[in-house]
Image (cartoon, rainbow, N blue to C red; front, side, top):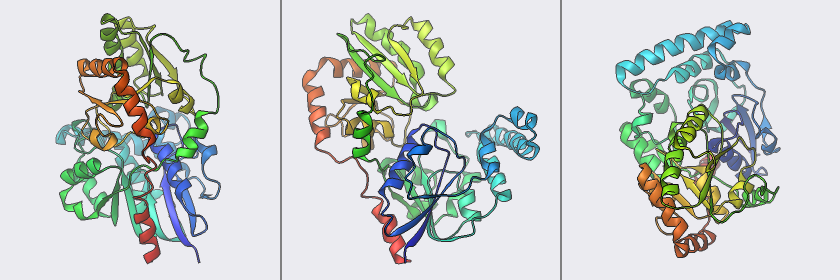
Length: 399
């Protein structure tokens, strides 16, 4: 008899977590396991890529509405969710000021919405909460083991959690999966009483899928070859990714005589800020926003260097995908950087300030031997991350 597994995820918008979820679903042996997939929203460009062997459960509208603007909820007549969103924002912002932590208004909202959501009727051997917060997993799912993912560097000042509020949620899980050793260390430092529950499962990425998708179409019109270097960064336009500082970095490099074009693929709340910074730096011909792309892999294949100038990360999926495609990778020295690349072997790590990023890009551009070494070494490595997932199947087989 097949073991029964539940996987809980977000919607399938374009993002690293969502692509890692696709990797998880593709890594499952469906001859041995029956899999239900519960998504908080049936939206996003990646929906068609979900493994058809996973049984997609019906959407519960209360969760998908959480992402709507508060004013829009009231205008469209969703008064209950509108009031929950409004009061969650008030409470979340008040707690953030009092505790000097990030606002938990969406977390508080999802906790409240989980109380009114319908429970899942089936019993599962293992339930995997791939996307938090994990209140629905805890309170409305019947499973022998419940595992919740932590995708963030929780020791980062920009992500300082309100532990008084979030600790009970994490404590209610049987296990907590962290996406890297450094992410585990940061989680353990913030939640030391839960250290025995944490273990590492790196993002699961299918190299075959990435390489096949990279051949899907030609991008030479959007990223034409030229005498300089094509740099690429992929990610949400948000504080963590630090794309807003790329224009200033490019201005420095241009002043030093470095010929480059730095392309940005993504979308998000910081797009206007990035455009403003491009205008301020006068780098309209150098920093080029390509926008939202369902398939970023042909663009990664076409670039000369893949750069991740982040302020903080747990483990960036796009960096691993670039390594799979044999690209020289440069990342900033965020706290979990050493779990992302082996410095000087399959990636270059630079300092996090603008001068450091400029120096890093310049070093990789000008040092041909370094670039070739990084390319050769990525070809020797397995970036699939499938080893850690065996821990889950071992738990399933014990049931």
